[in-house]
Length: 73
Image (cartoon, rainbow, N blue to C red; front, side, top):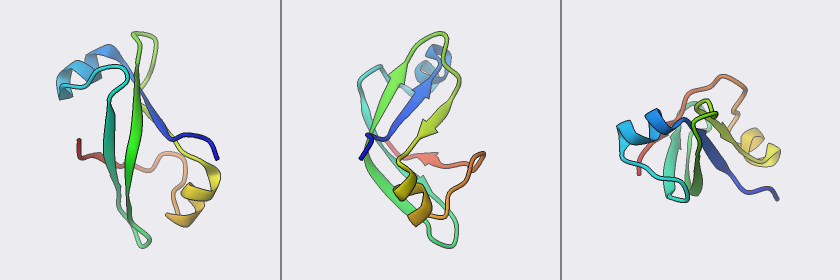
């Protein structure tokens, strides 16, 4: 199973107080809403804000491309 992680631009990370290598909790709303623990934060100035999860995890939560989730820290 692939690790779940968030790509984050340095400006986005700075605005929420996160650093490369941090781990966060993510709340994904919806009819099968879930909270994901231990989501790795990857920060670079070339990244756009985007979360990557394993296909099985996305399917279990009924997530699709473009859905918005919340960082809980």
